[in-house]
Image (cartoon, rainbow, N blue to C red; front, top):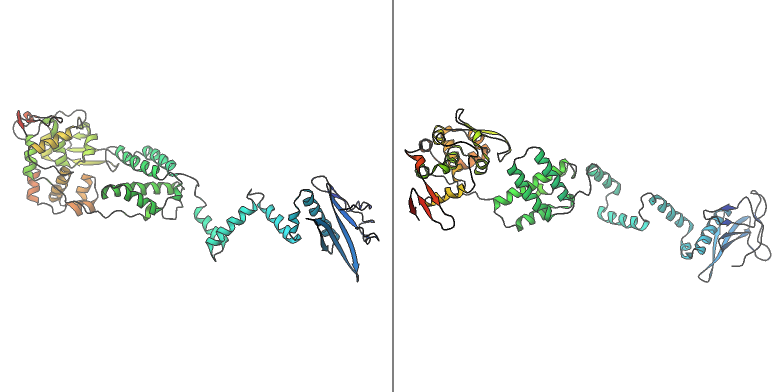
Length: 459
């Protein structure tokens, strides 16, 4: 593009950010009308940026003034028309900058389109989001929103999620929850159950807590191939976890969690199996002293075996006739007091009561081995089931038995009511030690299966 010599309009000359001067060859003061193109067809002004130069031509016709921007792009002569010199200069500067930087194609945009483009970039500058990414995000949101207002939807979203702490993973919350529960004094049994279940849950779902869905949780629980009762216990732990997460603002407080929508399995409860008074009397009268605490306390107080394993003789008060189950020992993490019946006191009185009530866990195996020797089946939780069944027949109060057994009245009423009669219950709580009770012996070799009861080997 040929340069045309002219005068410098000092009023209109400006410096751009790069230090290049925008030069015109229009003469006169700011109020002086620019002169027409000369006979040689030269421009009335010229804008330069680096080595790029864009001329501006003036034309007057019927009292109207027009400014023409002329430049070459891709071997073609381009021309743009303006009614205002300032607008023509602004466009000429843009064209010159793009020609200098080799981006002539950008000049395809019309001035108002380019202004919109630059305004959009300016609005996004603080966010650091590229314009293309912002448009893509808008289009995705627009597609999801349908005819709804994006602003209204964003406002509603902010109302529900403004307090939520983002990007927190399930393993992080599990670790935090276990520490809190331990600090709050949860029992070791309960902590163990939470730790076992939730660590498995965190291993399966290591992502953010807000990403977990009820369908995924339900599918995972079904894939474990566990008993219905076990599955329900695991789900309860997971529900507690999500409740904790919501309380820590990791989930919206007014929204249901993924676990809330997973239902417990409807399991058919097994019939409650109990010993008859004759069966219990047979086992007790054949029992050696080391097994009597398990049998007598289990049968006549209903304490759970897990609680019994943690019980110390210091919690057994024969004078006050109570057994104290401390919060750290109870399954429900709450203290309760169990009464000692007259016949239970008779069984415990002659025993050495120091240290742990159950000296070793293998004693439970000895108890069931003794029952097998006596040809008596040992159903699961039979001692506890027997106590609750006979106790409610005696006191006639599900609430009282629930307090003593550490259970809910609804469970007591549903599973144990009217399983036996008051007369049979009186016989149960009338079982007393026989003469020479402490002289019984029972030896059992687990490896060989050899069993010796009171000096006689039995099958």
